[in-house]
Image (cartoon, rainbow, N blue to C red; front, side, top):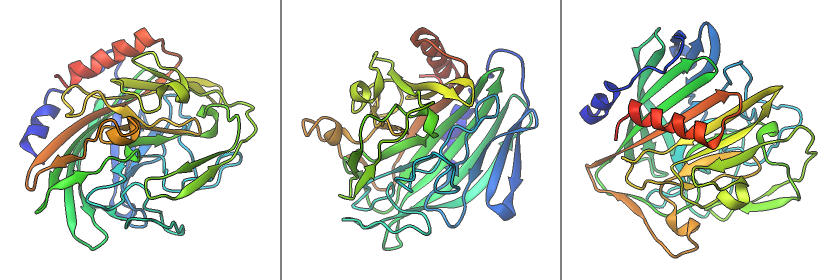
Length: 346
């Protein structure tokens, strides 16, 4: 693990409020680490060999309701079955040196592509701290190109926090280019993402066809909107997919109701990230993603980034996923964001 990343973790502060016990339970034979809060499941870090990337799956609210989509890992009545590579929560990208890590299909699914698919494979998983109001994992993964070569090493600290009505996941991700520069060619397909359950989608007004960065069109059907109530809000006041998609903001939330529980899900960018504030790849059909790299796609060609990590060099990205039981105003979300900056200072 990079020394700079370790030094950041030493600054991580506890959440205010009554303490909750966060425990990590290693299940090496099942290729996962379960995260439980006060004895109840929250999520699992999974690095299954039949998947093309590590996942946090599923994600639960403070009341224990799953808010990530079940497909393709399981079939849930009423859920969409588009985009089988959208699995719970993950981090990857659509074009690194001409290889697609985002759209790479899971086992049992076949997707044509204009560029080859890659995969992210686990190297090591280590529980660092356990059993307090925070728990911490250190994980390492290899980004493997279609030809079998390694383009990036990902060393990451994942910090899980819990307080009443609040769950937090901090992802401190260091990417190190190997013997060649790693070029993140501008693509809308990235990077830290959550695919949510049907009730947190925006009501669908009509069928849509979305084309991924590899040119693969996918039809997303219009469905019954009963109980569907999701709404996006950015730190810049953009509301819904139509206003928020492709814009830049330091945070965005997705609010709605899951099985009778009001929830507010947030993804927070960090000022120390090289491309702050991030662009947003938020879709009404339930994809919620922050994309720090895809400038050309989001500016309609006005800006080209092609973010590059030179050979042998590293870049660290910091993101927080906030899961709050109950509604939050923009001002309350901003207060949560400021706590994030205290926990991982600028």
